[in-house]
Length: 232
Image: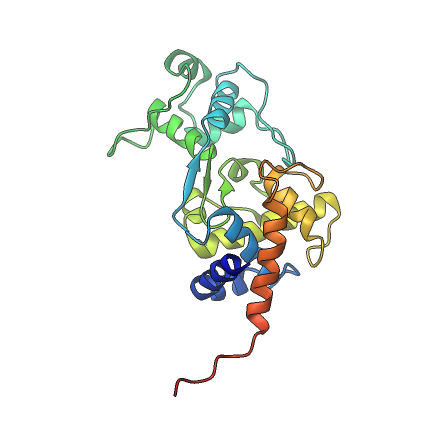
C-alpha cells in the first residue's frame, strides 16, 4: 500500500493538470485514468514497447498471407489495404513485403532514411505493433479507430503525455459505448477492457485489476486529503 501511495503521489505531482484536463468533458474519474498510467507506465511518458508477434501478424496481413488483423475489442479488422495505406500510401505493395520481409527481428529504417519505400513502410508497420506513452496505447488503434467520434491521433500524439491521456479517455469511452459500461463506476470491467479488450477478459498479470483498483483509490484519497501544514 505504501508503494502504491508513493507511486500515485508521484503521478499526481507530475501529471495532475494533464489528467484533470483529459477527463474534463468525461465522466471518467481522474483517479481511474491515473491508475491506468500507474499500471501501464509508472508515469513515464517516453516508455514504448515493441511487440514482435503483433508486428509479424501485421506484416502477414499487409503481405496477403493472412486475411485481416484484429484483437478482442477491435472496432474493425484491419485488412491489407488499411495497413498499406497507412504504411506507405501509393507505394508499398504486398509483393514487396513478401519478397523483402520474412520475419523477426525487425530492422528499422536507418537514421536519415527517406520517408518512403519499403523500409519506411515497415517502420510505419512497426509503430502499429508498439505501445506508447503514459497509458501504453497500441499503435494499431491509430488505424482501426480512425474516423471514430473524431479520432485523429498520431504516433507523435501518443508520445506526448497530455495527448496520450486524451487518447486514452477517447479509447475508454469507445469501450464504454461498445460494452454498455458506465465510465463513472464500472472500473473493473474498464480495466479488463484496457488490458484484454473485453470486460470479462483474463489479464496476463492476475494483479492487473486489483492493482488498478487500489491505485485508483489511492489517487482519489490523495485528492481529498487536507493540505500539509506550512513549514515552521
